[in-house]
Amino acid sequence: MQTIFKEELLTHLLKGTSSKVGEDFFKSLVKHLCLAINVNGAWVTEYNEEKLLLQSRAFWIDQKFIEDYDYSIENTPCEIVYKNKDFYHVPDRVIELFPQDPDLLPFHAVSYMGVPLFAENGSNVIGHLAVMHNMPLPLNNEILDVFNIFAGRAAAELRRIKHEEATRESQDQLNKLVESAMDGIITMDNSFKVVGLNSSAKRLLMYENAEGIELDQWIHPDHRDKFRRLADSIQSLPEGSQHGWLPKGIILRNAERQLLQTEASLCCYTVNKHLFFSLIVRNLNDKIEAEEKISKLSAETHYLKQIIAEEHNTSDIVGESQAIINVMNQVMQVAPVDTTVLIYGETGTGKELFAQAIHTKSKRAAGEFIKVNCAAIPASLIESEFFGHEKGAFTGATAKREGRFSLADNGSIFLDEIGELNLDLQSKLLRVLQEGEFEPVGSSKTKKVNVRVIAATNKDLNKMVKDGLFREDLYYRLCVFPISLPPLREREDDSILIANTFLRKFSKKFGKKMEPFTNLDEQIIKNYSWPGNIRELQNIIERSVILSQDNTLRLQLNIPASAPAETVSTFADNRIFSSAELEELEKNNLRKAMEACQWKVSGIGSASELLGLKPTTLSSKLKSLNITRK
Image (cartoon, rainbow, N blue to C red; front, side, top):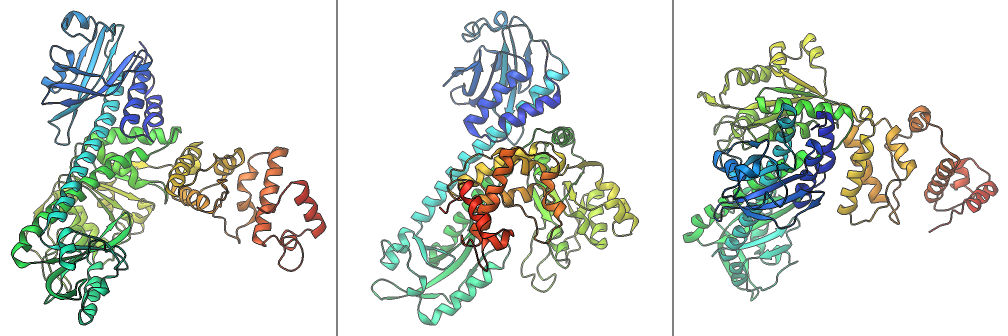
């Protein structure tokens, strides 16, 4: 039996599962697993502990999928996997070892290999990945490595699905709590127009349907300024602390013009980048209990959503080039060993995405993944952001606050733009790396943490060390395992794969059914230098989809008007165009010129003036190329 090389395996894995989730992900995974280690059957299951059943998420055997395949684990090789919580391998004569297993004989099974899939705690079995073959299946390190990599992807997706289900359940509980609360809860958008009322608010204000009503209609004129000041102030507070009380309450007016003296609090939050406010009008007796329940469920929902986002984002790494396969090999090597990683890469190469992949594949995956952009935090606040502060430690420190390293305890912290740290903070960071301890600002008590540091930069830290801008001891402490991300221009044909991913994403986002890239589009994408890398490619595809008409994409490259001619024609310098492609180039250029001049052919501000052509020549070209105004 022969297996493919690891580079080809990663190509199988990325190509087969990078853009899929749920059922499609599992189906693609088991099919590609069979291809990777050359067996005729593979399946992923979820374990139903109450019924002692394995419920198949995907089962591929003999070149076809078996749907709705559930079976009892008793007297099966899968039972050994679940009981021992470990890898199990039967190289030959599996039917003789498990004669009471009714599923082995119909599939002509000769050999078996299975591994458990664990929950975040690393002890509870939530499913398993297994293969069986109609021939003997000897074990070697290559097969085992391949199998474990596929098992890791299967476990991550199964955990993500379970988190998603838990999030929905938590959200349902939160909605039921809000609806059943004795306090009135009024939800508004960023212009303070009502988007929802719970039952108590409807009874209090005597409105059944109040969507679109401006809150000012209900607030007494003397209290409107007080409400607006609080709304403005809480928006500047850190996430998770954006709430406040209205001093001495607020007077509301209901549908019958009755004045209501209430005690109230206001909070704001962001959902899908949209700002919302919730005004909670409450009675004092029930205030404490309801607030605690809402806070607890809100925190749980936020945490679960964050885990889903982090696990799902690792599948956003798209590419089949040798350069990106080499990087993924490094990620797979370093992720389990819990060492410090330094990621080098130009702006826009996806350093954060690879840092998330390292965390997700590590033993700390169940812990938090905390992100810090060192360049985005003012120098006066960055120590507090890193290590937290005590109440009264400095002006504006009205309450004790935990720092990012505390939040990352038993997890990972990603320090982006590490080269922007000042020398004083570099020494304190070095202490955390060496001793795992620090003092919050304003505190004399030492705090211990267990944190894995993943740093990233687009600067030459070695040169900064020589220039005295970066501590040499910190540099060597960070650079235990350096990973260099290739720029997009060095990733062969990955630019087309990534562009297609963005095209599907933004077509769906903006509700457009875009035509695929033309051959000319692909040549432009492949030959452009992409100085902004993947981020620039994403922005260009998004803008091009927005500006497109009739579902036809027109690429809008970020080439400045003042750029030299060699920059503008970079993509053309590397190839010879066919006659049909040249005609297509000319048609696109003429149409853009006509649209820019509102289809004015001659005179001042006309397309003929813009192109440097005689009006009669331009008219002739438009007619011969069948270019008309739509």
